[in-house]
Image (cartoon, rainbow over all chains, first blue to last red):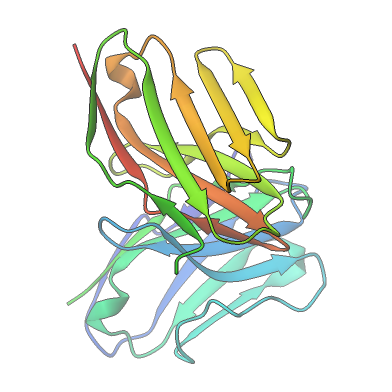
Length: 115
Length: 109
């Protein structure tokens, strides 16, 4: 596709429920990042995938958060037993490689609201 | 100490003026530096990146990097109302990108 796509664009859920957020990166991009952005805050790194390497999970805030990337393309971020503090915009970004001079392209984000 | 610090603003400039946005970073191992623009309710979009000391110009935008002082700035010449947005500074260290909280810019017609 032309850009990074994410679904759903909005998700409202009840506290304690599980949610899955999807990211479809730009074709050919081997690196994929998940971030979250709370109101008025910067981007908080969550997890990073590069090719077939083990993901960098150092940013995941708790064991309720997990992510996978199938076939080196589509990624799913799962939040189990959601809490109200999980409410944020979840952004996915992809880049062609891990060189620092390369850049990330962001998807439109998923706005998660936990009631 | 946060990896990347920005003045949250808001910064207001009149149309046609130069807007100056600043960012400092803490890790001297930072490799590359990025400026993103984020309109309200939208995702960040890249404006420029820079990885060598000095200035880099692209149209009305100039990025300035000073690794000795650990700061990077973005100048917007001939500011337009459409430049009104939040500007995010990001630095790359290894596999990770660290973002500042952003500076809100308003260009007054």
